[in-house]
Image (cartoon, rainbow, N blue to C red; front, top):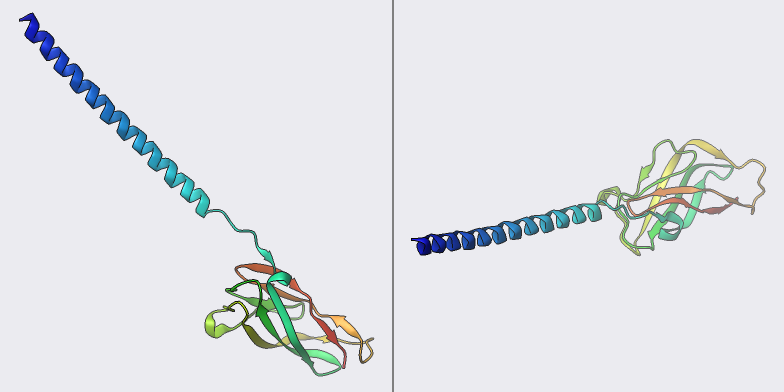
Length: 157
């Protein structure tokens, strides 16, 4: 009788060991899954630093009208640092930022040059400048990838 009791206890101990191993394995697997989920959410939440617009965009072919003050300005903007999305341009005398390339929701592909013309909300005075004088006209560019001022040098006509 004692022998069968020991045999029964040994069987129970073996079942307990297998039960503990399975439970510990499940706990370790659960911890690993939680760590992977937390690590991936932290990584996806990282925000890439914005690049400087003057390095990401190039402005060429600028012209303004009329010749004594700037009421309308036009130029081409080119994405040189990569594809640009949700691109808006603005300047001091423009009330609302202008969406560039609205047919493509503000997207400019790398190397693509998009012409843009807009009227200023108030004229930019050129008083005190002589014909031939160069002057800066800062253009602010904001996109998903870059933001900041892109220098634009104009010459008084």
